[in-house]
Image (cartoon, rainbow, N blue to C red):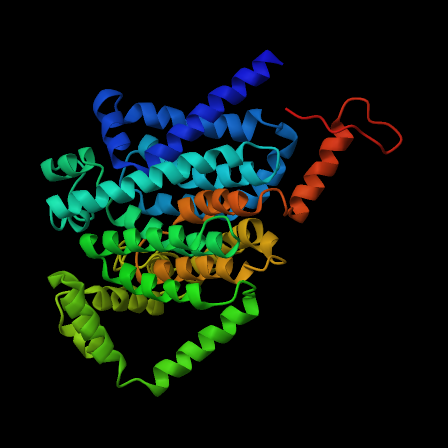
Length: 428
């Protein structure tokens, strides 16, 4: 019993460390400075072993079934491996970690997932504020962090000021609908939700991420929707939005240019101006992303089945997670991506289908898909770790997936003293 308690105490400490490390740049920098990157690598490896191997070994097959498409995807990455085998293996575990932890949290509602919510909220709030302050003091710092090497002197300085870069800014934007849902479900007051919205808007403007601003504007419309927002309502709203764009096509460029002017940012202004010009505007702008999309898409069309997986030259634009993977792995990779997203949605989002705020939850997922289409990253930290923690804070133990019910039945059968089809569930 003491050994078990010690195991969980150690694991809980490591999970808290991983959450804070993921969110706060200063923790990442201090770790690499005083403990070296190998310390964090050891934590990741130990956490995966503790969760997959030592925690309820009888459930290992359930983990395996859920993780299978993610594992296959990472095995495919070996064909593009530029690091040595040890570093590649670590990257694989790093990719799988949020998925493993998310599954670990949701497979048993008695877990300490509720306690982790305070850590997540605190780390997100602190880093949002320090990012705003840092970007005021060092203009363009957040954008520069996405371009410079980690050992660059500016990167070190920005990290020590806890300035969030590309990954952090979009993490906050993707989680923004969860803040609105928290208000709709009466977990926070309207004034608190509006205060969070203002702070997030300031962070976006000072960090100068254009797509983040557009996502923020769209998500802010959720303030004006009803609490009982269903999946059907989201689909209807999306159709109406498309029709609106078609009808008022001539007004959209003017709106984008106006938005660029009031943003006060030269970077955002130029990008919004390019976006207002449509395809021609994007092709003639300094932002080359549309050319990078075309590069990946053309590569996919040339090798539609397996992409450039078995080709000597791997061609992709490196600016869209979804299109780039189609270029690298073809339809085969597309199928793997489908099952990865399917498993994520089924496990972490679908259990809330009977909740009044299900439409808000679905929008988080859709928004993440769109971001993965127009930018890099699959955002597993958001989809598999932060969203489940946040939704547990909102709804508590009110939902339970069929898989969880099946696992609960297995627990009852394995519990000591089980007889005659009855068993006493043991808790850890």
